Image (cartoon, rainbow, N blue to C red; front, side, top):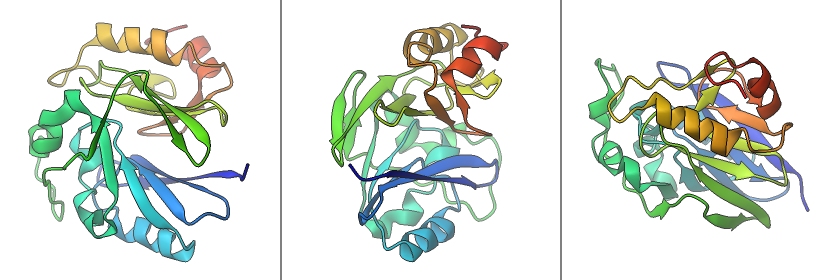
Length: 213
């Protein structure tokens, strides 16, 4: 099996992480989350590496993770997300409490809804969808068991967790999601988070002050 490649980008006005994944030697790429003002950096990287953007996977419907989808519309990529955030995908301005110069908050059309526990194949690799509500109703994580990496959105961060004071948020749900969906993964699983540095399951179980393992 060819090497699995991940490129992390920190983009947009509140430094949201996006991850471009592809297989070494292949020409297809998947973008996990699309922050605002991402078009230039993402497109340049794709061109420099002879990659075609085939799919955009959205971990949840908050504006800072989805506003870049409209910028990448020329790529004609399939967009996937969880139905519980349908209202946020259709109305991204609901979760933006301030004006954003140069940022267009346009509705996002989801081409494929994913569900908790769903498995699908990407370049011969198994991907499991983990529904992790709490930060918002439709937050999902994408778990690659063979690569021991999980793209978690804003469920958990290095030494912190996603905020739950926004509409649709619930700390009880978030805590349950982390305990039942994230902390049950292998200890050395890398957590590719929505903001800040990546972390690991083992590290957060030991040191996370909000949800200890």
